[in-house]
Image (cartoon, rainbow, N blue to C red):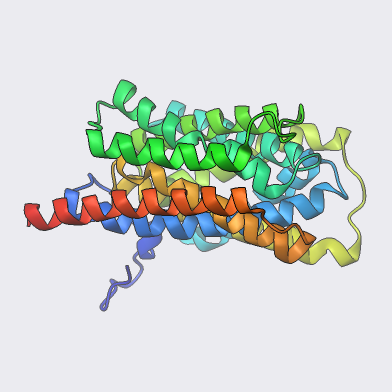
Length: 308
């Protein structure tokens, strides 16, 4: 994604204007989404750790403030022009949906495991695909539908409704899936703005809204926890930029199934950091999810080759 001969003063490629997606960019969008999901799960694992020590409102406030600080520092020479948007209302609502997703998800992590919360939230690719067809006019062929349904079945195997996963807090993760899907569709709608503009607006809206609420939940941050807050903001910033770029390069329906890979990473982090080993059902569901994602990716690769 890097240019061998960058123009002096140009934005980094990840912050460059998105433009209209062409079909050959589908695979690029998939790769960026996979990397974004990886970074998001690292952020989620950090957020789970911090949410056991601090109120989720304070955790999410730090995430957005650090995000805004990093983005503003990078874009300082052109901050005013970057803030200019063709879709201000869309950008505000994008920021609200992303704030809601983070707050709801981090709140659920206080009561249920990272893998379980991620699995519940992993219904969002289905919501994204359906929303893209209903509101954005994107086509969803039978093969995409089968891939998405297979991935959803894999997620259901992991969740196993009725097996004790559905703590009341799971409803928070479920709502977070809906707000995440809405944010993804709004990201697609706002693709006429540059990635830098979308990242900046997300950070700004989240910072302003959480700053209004955080005084009611504030507690002093211990020095030994500063590293975790810094990582939280860093992971969130990079992941958000990658996510926006992915949805600018590819159709929402084409890349939606790959959001399920977050379940694999969440299970790994749960094992590494909290000693929660995935059981056989979780592993079986994960294999189905990965297989479904690879199937859709192969279909996209063949379609791209035929188009060239």
